[in-house]
Image (tube, rainbow over all chains, first blue to last red; front, side, top):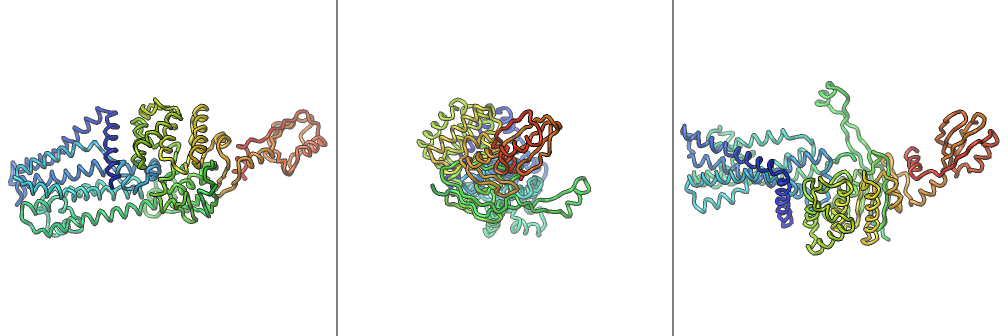
Amino acid sequence: MKKWFVLERFMFSREVSRRLAYKFDFFFSLFTISILQIIIPLYVLLLYGVSDGFPGWSVGQALLLVSYISLGESISAVFFQGIIWNTVDNVKKGTMDTWLLAPMHPLAYFINRSVDVEDTGKIVTSAAMTGYALFLLEATILEIAFLLLYLIVPIVFFTTLAILASATSILFIDSYRIYEFVNLTSFLSKYPLSIYPALVQTLFFTLVPLAAIGVVPILLLYQSASWILLASALVVFVLCALSILWWNNTLKNYGSAGG
Amino acid sequence: MVDIIRVQNLSKSFRVAKRKEGLKEAIKSIFSREYTTKQAVKDVSFSIKEGSIVGLLGPNGAGKSTTIKMLTGILSPSSGTVSCAGFNPFTQRKEYVRHIGALFGQKSQLWWDLPAIDAFTLAQHLYDIPRAEFLSRRDDLIKRLRVEEEVYRPVRNLSLGERMKCEFIMALLHRPKIVFLDEPTIGLDVFAKEHIREFILYAQKTFGTTFILTTHDMDDIDHLAQRVIIINHGTVIFDDSLSALRGQANMVKNVRLVTQTRLPSLRQKGVSSIARISPYEASMRLDTSILSLQEFITRMTQETVLIDLEVSRASVEEIIKQLYLS
């Protein structure tokens, strides 16, 4: 584990150096990605400015929901989600072979090699918006600490999607669209649950744990929901474990490329 | 010397989707796909002594790369057993790969936009090499391969020869017991080739490294390999010392004849690859272990008048080509 963190730190610094070889592209990407990240929180503020917003949800809560999920998604994007593009690219070119020669668990090494510094802009923007939402909610230190700790759940959720997409790429090579579809579905988590029918709400707390990545901590902290809802977070970890098992299994079927 | 690699009855087959030409067939393949099984490696067995340099040869698609991929733990065998440095490469991959290095000539381990020196530091972290030891090994290899300035330039700015030298450093920094070299000198000029060959021999002598060399460059084999394993159609068709292969080459002669009268029939045991250049001139290959040169000339002079006769030894390359075809 220590080695993974050492490599992750090393790869992050090397990735920054690599991107700085093309400075303009790097800074422009950082800028545009940061700006795009503000759109949804701005939309929430606009919505509450012209209407009553989502029933039962204050502007602070709704803003916290979108920003908090985006924060988890951004952290996952920088440190984990790069495996999607890297797997497709390396399986296609046959260069995945060289990565399999690293004395580490292949998935851990793949994640190390896939750091994507471009998305750090997203982290900054999402963190700023989350901070603003917490300010509106007059959050206590304890609430902030809980939210920071709970951040592991959305990070694990989005990383699970990336692992599944990577495994699919080992099997079927070009499979970006599957990831896009799953990622779009996860967008549903950015709305307060009250807008969905009861059946969908149940589904989001159980088999498809979209509620666990944002709605649950807000319900617990600001709407006095039952702590039993935390069980839905466990589903995220179970899905993650299953995705790793599947990834390992697909690697056994990896056929490499010719030559 | 002990065996560092033991391969027994190794086989690997792939399930390959078959698709015919055209849009109709492409649509048909959505609903039902035909598959064939391609046997890439069939029942291959050999062992390799520690500290030796072995050339693994074969035409394209012969099964060399698949064999190497199974020896490096990248692919799992369909059947058979492999033991390398005491490990099962596939099931004990994580521990095993610490003891091997690999250089795939066409698959770089360096970062295109960064200097090679950065990639070397990755190897330090990856193989947990103590900093002082890493620096001493790195600097020694850089000096030996004479790339003191090149390692600080982005890889994309290096010549192929310079990049290959950096790839060698990357593959050897952790002092592996076995190094797999796949086309290490492909596309290099004579000086770079010579330099890399010298370096391989140095590593073999100094560190006792075992090298498995896959190449189409017969000069590499000639300069480096003590033993040659030839694979074709997934099976081993030759496994002996390079001198045995050379001996086989000595037995085979390339003969060119020019006669005064029309050429007689040249079809006889021991004579192959006959090419008639004109009614009076032909070239052929003569296997002197079947028909001696003296007997061949005697037979020819009995049937015609020889104006010119050229005899040369077949090259190792020609012998290998013959083995591929047989």
